Length: 206
Image (cartoon, rainbow, N blue to C red):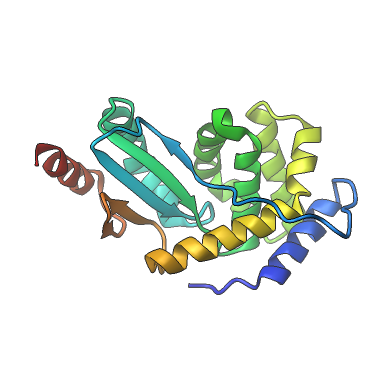
């Protein structure tokens, strides 16, 4: 797993977004813990927590082949409560999360879907300015405006808080890679839809 250098990550985020957003203030107050986003009923009998990076190809594959079925058959029907915990192995992953969070609770998972569906488009470039531009295009397509995206991409305090939360959660749950999936507290690595369905049905039957 790539070890993040927090200062370098924040500096790179500011440098890339500065090309297309206003200058940042030097002194920025610390943000509160950002928290995670969830789907489904909090009273669902099965709780899933997925650790995922928006730049992880295996996570994009899980999203395409597993998550969409999970949402339709278990989350939307009240059987599963799902929480996503973002992982930042690189600056692009952090920026993507900041764009997703810019949409708030109402738009977060819609942008989440777009980020994974278009992962190769924005995560495949070696040019950080182009990556930011592609991420901004996703945000605009999701209904955000340029002013909102400027504010979100320039929020260094939020970026610091996100990285602190990520580091704390990864250490507490001893997560080494993505996707890592916890089902009612039991750890699992990447898996097929059939394998996940079998686990969920067993949990629900028990």
